[in-house]
Image 1: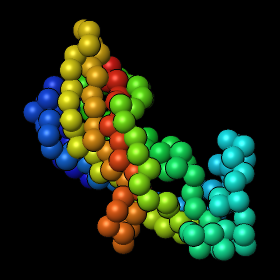
Image 2: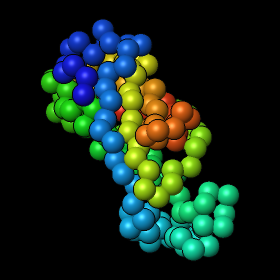
Image 3: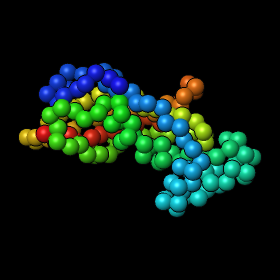
Length: 152
């Protein structure tokens, strides 16, 4: 976890890595549960036998499953910012899924503060260059510019 940040000093950290999450193992049950919720039952996610003969050699997580872990990894990496009453996901300016995440792999996220601006009194827009890494692999699972609204 990075040094504790506050809303008052956040702008001082633009261009800096501000947090790194713990590692999270992606397990088949999680992948299957995500398939059920999203109705995405493509065999590369849900059928270990058939997926074993795919180019991946086994099942892989949905890209959106890995993306959905960002909120938890962000909380781990940065915790709550002093001076805020809440934060809200505002969306993504860009997103690329670069490497499939295989069943059993571990992922973790790095957050670099790209920008922070006050939108109106008591509300800030913070953009984070976000990288989700796969433990033991050079190429990340995904990269994104993630936008979060912060409220005082």
